[in-house]
Length: 389
Ligand SMILES: Cc1cc2nc3c(=O)[nH]c(=O)nc-3n(C[C@H](O)[C@H](O)[C@H](O)COP(=O)(O)OP(=O)(O)OC[C@H]3O[C@@H](n4cnc5c(N)ncnc54)[C@H](O)[C@@H]3O)c2cc1C
Image (cartoon, rainbow, N blue to C red; front, side, top):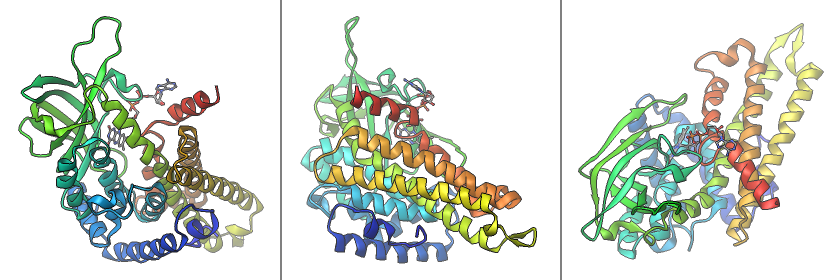
């Protein structure tokens, strides 16, 4: 049943316009088949990101990352279609999924806190695939605890001047648009720091990028701000309230990380079942071994539980009943269970499972970062426990 491409819209009680979501899945199915045929080389991460963004825009999927007022599909950005899209794209490629989601994660803060003029200038270009986006929050000393941020916004004219460094920034170097968070003002001893949010174009003087490499194809790097001047019109939200925008943005997208994990696990399950049916050892297919059947049943059950959690959290948010613990449970369970499912897939493939070029070997590398970015599994547990206590 996980090989049934319609499981998400038909069987999981997805909130939203059912006909629209099923039509979206039909389009995703043929899009992913075309992308597979195109065999896009991901070794040049910038080039493949540009190509993926162009194709996603041509196929109209980027309309789901912006509100209708700026060329988007719905009055407000909805989590359920974002989840469906990520699940489908991740079945094919983690890099394709990243190219899609960064258009939303990197531009939605402008929707949430930018002026009408800034939103009108940027968001239609994002939907058309003309502007590639990045979201710059993490720093060398500020990961799970973003309040350790050292990048500083010094007053400058009607705006600010940015000094500091961000790291592990997806799309660093290929992005045309950066949303940057920075410490503001000087805090008196004992007072909590305050942070601002700012929009910065990729070609701003003083902005430079140093590429980083992670274990799976992913355009990523350090972004340095050496006196980058940001006019007042490019501030997002009120002074000192930038972290609210960062957190509101993560509220929209956190559950979609769970959906990407579902996509990777879907692919692993499909690869595993096909392999178990065809690989013969001890005179019969591996699928006849009860031990392997039990393992398959365990990961399949885990997977469907993840699916229910992801679409429950996405639907609740779209109905205006979002709760942080629902998204946290969805991300936690879906990413952890996808890791187990993919590890099981690699084991079922034996030596082939760790051979470079095999689908399950790629999935094994692609899934790992999902338990880390947009809040590690441990941070999701803190969110869940906080809501209980
Ligand atoms: C592929 C990838 C893409 C990324 N893209 C972006 C991006 O586009 N923009 C961006 O801003 N950032 C991005 N990040 C950064 C990511 O969000 C951070 O890596 C993440 O928030 C964790 O921060 P850290 O790496 O500093 O780990 P740390 O915060 O140092 O954590 C290290 C370990 O300690 C655990 N830990 C920390 N605090 C606690 C606690 N209180 N209780 C229990 N355990 C704890 C963590 O769970 C983790 O296991 C990306 C990261 C990766 C790997």
